Length: 158
Image (cartoon, rainbow, N blue to C red):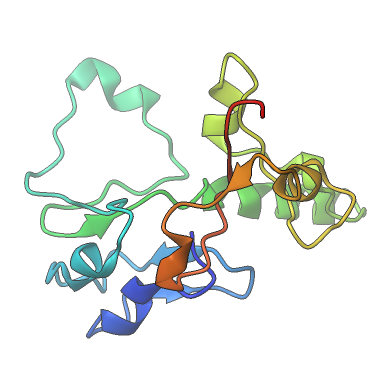
């Protein structure tokens, strides 16, 4: 995810967008499969669905109902489990309380066996990700391109 994503400005139909939180999303039903966004993305995080998704009958019940199955001919990318974010916000609202950062955890962070991944608000100076982003070991891939990436990596200890 980028602060200034080049994929958004090249989409001729507005299928790719950046929301108010800075997450880059795709309206799959609007995507025409031109793949301009895949070319514009310097990180190669976008994939084109060349084939119609097919699932064995036994797996139909295990598909996530919160995530739509993309059709052949559209581009997709990681959305940091935006469906989880929406569900966590709805749950907090239904409970009559404020949404807390720990209410929302993307699947990749939850599934990481070594706890090497963190997700949070970079604008909150007290969050774990904000603190880690200020370390000497922190770096961003291809940040000289001006995309202002929000994914931050830590090099080995210095």
